Amino acid sequence: MKKITIVIALFFSVLAAQAQTKISPNQTDDKNSDDQESLAKDYLSQIMGVALSATSNMKLFHFVYDWIGTPYRFGGSSRKGIDCSAFTKELYSQVFNMDIERNSRDIFSMVSPVKRDDLKEGDLVFFKIHSRHISHVGIYLGGNRFAHASSRGVAINSLDDAYYKRYFYRGGRMLESFKEELEKEDANKN
Image (cartoon, rainbow, N blue to C red; front, top):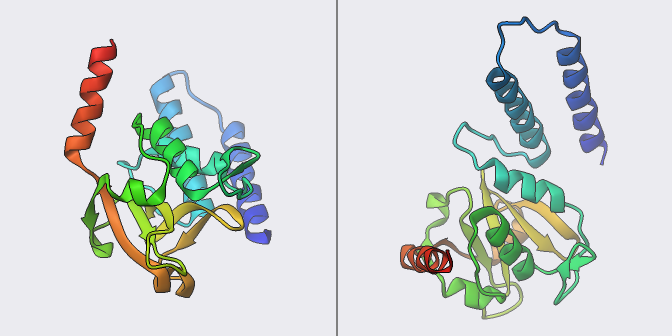
């Protein structure tokens, strides 16, 4: 909690310093927008412990940030309480415009397996926690960190944490054929 307070204070001090800086009339709104996005990336990088690059999906990181701290509730699918598969489903709907399954095992059936070392931002991570079957899913953010609805609520953890390292099963990337199917459905709706 103390780290988050320090990061928030740092963020606001940067904003205050930027506000005190005189902006020349030659600067465009694009430059201002780029500066704001850069500040947002720096802020989210600090909060999430993930280095955001120019190619990072800011919509993904904003979505995760907005949901951090939402309580866990088995079967839940709202801000009052959400479980891991509902969080993943909501994220994929809002960030990637994809309608995926509601159960972690069913979601796994929609992906192609990815080795842990080959995971990319937005890929899924699956766990077998106290089970022989997939029982948990999260979204990979980069730097071995992932977002998920844990028993402590929506949080960001590391795949290197002993607990998650022990139960990690496999990474997954949405199948291209599934993405194409969704795009066709969207085209037919329009």
